[in-house]
Image 1 (cartoon, one colour):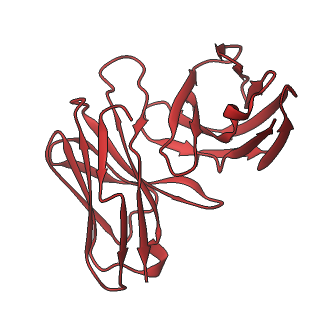
Image 2: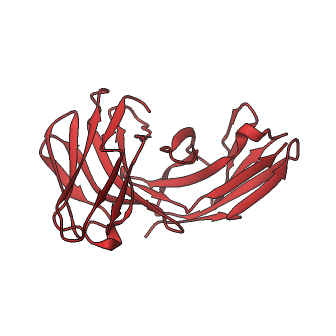
Image 3: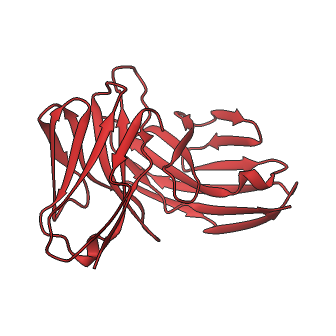
Length: 110
Length: 114
């Protein structure tokens, strides 16, 4: 069974204070690892897909990296508008279903 | 929300009452999914559809049924709602025709079963 564990559960940052979120996973053959952002009361919004170890993707202040066992979402010089819950999910080869972690809630104070 | 609407957005119902949630897409994507989201559990797949009239169970399908009579609509039915089905329900769509596909989510339906 595919498993995804995200840490920490919550992260409070000062504006400009860079940090990283962790997503550890076990899957029987990784097809893709997905990062989503979710604002309160809204549906998850797609951020990145990573397919193989060593791959990196960037979007504004966010950078996602992937190894064979985990992925990191780095937030560089965060702003209050980066406050959200960040979700990680994995998709196994031969399968269209996603297995999600419980998420990391990030709060950025001005 | 990638051309996905869900209705209703909020619903309060009583235990034992049947409830149907609707997901409508304008993207003509082949795959559609229903998830529920609960604190501490993340998103869990209830059912999914890989085409009109083609559906399959996810990891938490007990107490739920689905139907898809048109490409654009995917219905989730709680035959007899229970308090444990109080949750936020999300619909997602994807198009696996390419080598790599992403799931896009709707705005959600917040369901309270009293």
